Length: 123
Image (cartoon, rainbow, N blue to C red; front, side, top):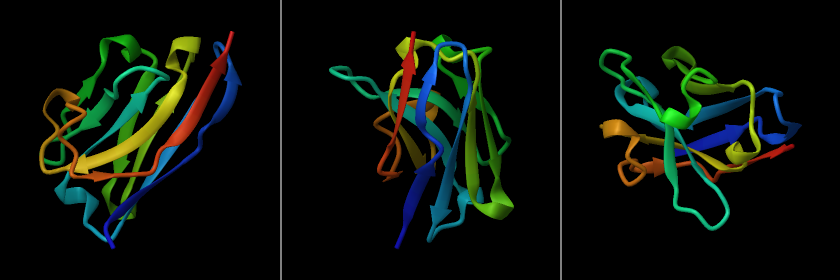
């Protein structure tokens, strides 16, 4: 069964950090682009950070540049999102998504999704 499993969410105060992890099960992560997406209450899902499988090119949403870092460990089939200096507007459900291509971290592009994990940032 092909799936992605997220972990590491939680509730933090503004300015604190969290690290999200995503485990790929049932497929070779190294052959796919992967990324993190989020959906805030009453808002559409948006791409946060994505990384290609060919050359490791990375895309970040403007709102997280300089604060979030995406990385991948293909041997372990893991993708990580290090989130620093968190803000209340970072609150939402975070999803790991994978696909052959994720152009500009388009949230309609992933073929495989995790179930999501909650991140809450209080001011």
